[in-house]
Image (tube, rainbow, N blue to C red; front, side):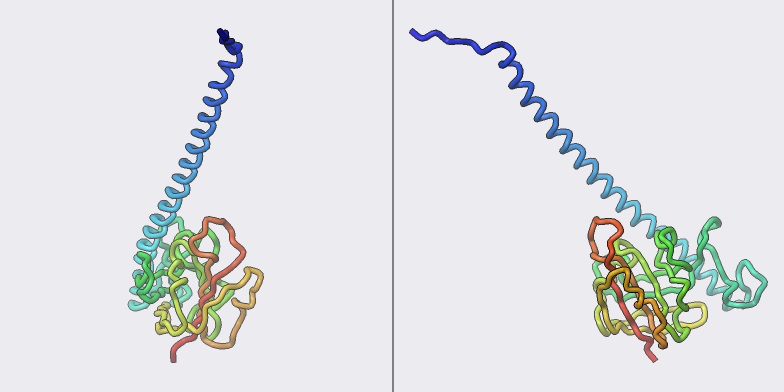
Length: 230
């Protein structure tokens, strides 16, 4: 008859503890991933909602600027020039709308086909609220290359659906008309020739690339080039 030999008490306790520790670690990792994903999603929703609300306020400021031009009464200035019309969308804003552009209604996004109000300046703070006009370049219809930049996950997400031959409607306080897409391409951010003078009435739209990527501060840019339709 064989006698059973019990394992030492320490060994019997350590194994369940190891299993328990492993389970706890896995649960902590799972919870961290869940919370991290939730934060990313909630942050994305917040950014989207902020962009939508800002565009509504900017649209109102744009309409006031248009009415000021029509009435020949510039806002916030007695100087009777278009440059003096700088209607802020909210009192503490350090920018103002300078143009309105409408992309073709061909993307599945909610912004597709809706007017986008372009703000003066292309800083990160400005582009959180709408596309920004690069101040070192002229406004559209000034006979040269006008550069407008925007975020790939909000206002300029629709750029990925534009093709050669598509028309973009553009309005400034001085003129309005159409620009036809001539090309779309991808460049490194160091290739600054895309914002240089072209000697022709051209519109250049720029956003980060790739689209739908969670990687911050990418080095590549997606560019849409368009020429003014006579």
